Length: 293
Ligand code: C5P
Image (cartoon, rainbow, N blue to C red):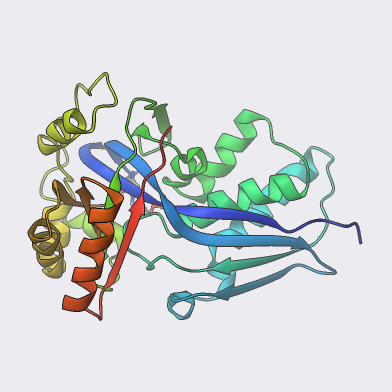
């Protein structure tokens, strides 16, 4: 067995600061125009060389995950190995450990971020790379959100999510994430949408000024929020709680139920998360900074 140091990756929570549903393709997938950023916090993956392939899970949300065989981390591992083998690159067995810190089925990437982190980690562990076309095909085959999670920095996502434009001028933000711990099925929310022909996001600030970004975001929406709130009314309550704690702006991310509040500083976000935990000890709250470009 070749020596391989532990490779660690953070599978960062994905936040849709705005998510407009602009159309639907013939195959049923929805066309989106979304502003996306990523949090410093997330799940954690550790990858080491092993005598055989292994997969283990720990962390606060480990018990909520389905069967390991359905985990996108393993689909990412197998898909990558297959494509590398097709290029004549043989890869050794690995033990992958996933620390599941993010709530599951919650609109912040979860499985997609784990799959993207697994690919980054395995490419480092196996000291290899994929050519861009193969890599893009693999990412999209794992899910519409996986390409953006693999990019991992502020971006605009269009198409079904795979058409990515980096947004280097998006500033880092201090967020509180709030989730009532009610899982939401993404296809169910897409199905429940009333309109699928909403206008796109439009012009964005040219500078990294947070106030300009908040003004811009105030005119944007998450088009999935009304449908998600009908199914999970706690989403409206989560936003009201974030607003009451002084959020400059609150909104739902993805297909929910996680909502985020943008705060003026990380200290304010931390104080808000602590106050919210006292109000709802049974919910998930997390204060975190987002990544800058
Ligand atoms: O691509 P992924 O497997 O993550 O998508 C899960 C489901 O969400 C799809 O089967 C589809 O019903 C819905 N979806 C969609 N339009 C998108 C992304 C996902 O309708 N852009």
